[in-house]
Image (cartoon, rainbow, N blue to C red; front, side):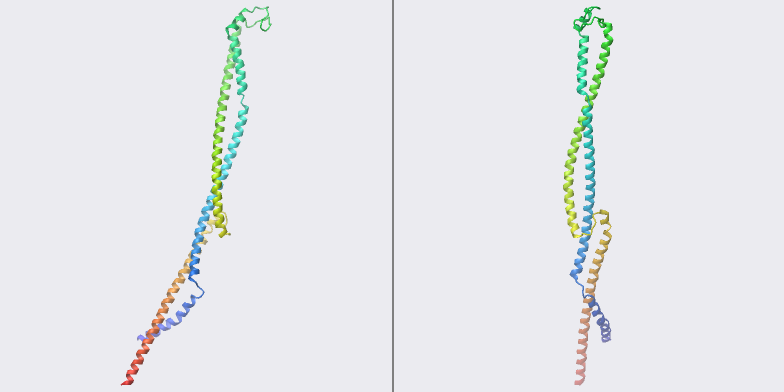
Length: 276
């Protein structure tokens, strides 16, 4: 019975071991492991590339936003310059000074005494006129009131223009501060973009077929994942095959050893029988 079992095993093992061993031909564990490593590295590099392109796209958008902000601030500062030039502060100050001096003369005691001394038909020692409509206070007062009203209006206009000037100068100063901050931010952004571009070029030199667009790179993830799974499965299949071949080899060796032992036992029995 035992010898019959050995025969049956030999029939299974003899054709199986060569066929399984043949499957190992042309396969290399180092190459398969290298393929797994390369597939995983490709996945890692793809994720890194997506991150880099995402950062580049975001910073490019910030760069555009900075440029737009700079354009708006520069435009506003030019407009402020125009508004400042349109202010008539100096002219108002001169006009107000003249009106105030006129008011002081018209209401001063010396001027009042001079008016009171004037008589119709007699020439004014200052201007030579012989008609003196403002010699009396009741005739002069409406003119003084009108002048005071005008002075008040001009003072309000001057105050408004001074306030506007201060506001414009303050806004212009704040804009200059913002422009300086923008300049610093743009310099830093330029440095960061240069580093990201260098990192992208390093990856792109290894994978020249990869697109620059983040969405296109995202679209490659599925294929990269499938390649990594396939490489891992190929290595597993190889290792499983090596294991099966090793088991078959050991089984063949055991069969041969058992056959040898069985033959030796049979010879020994035959010898013993002949001696009897």
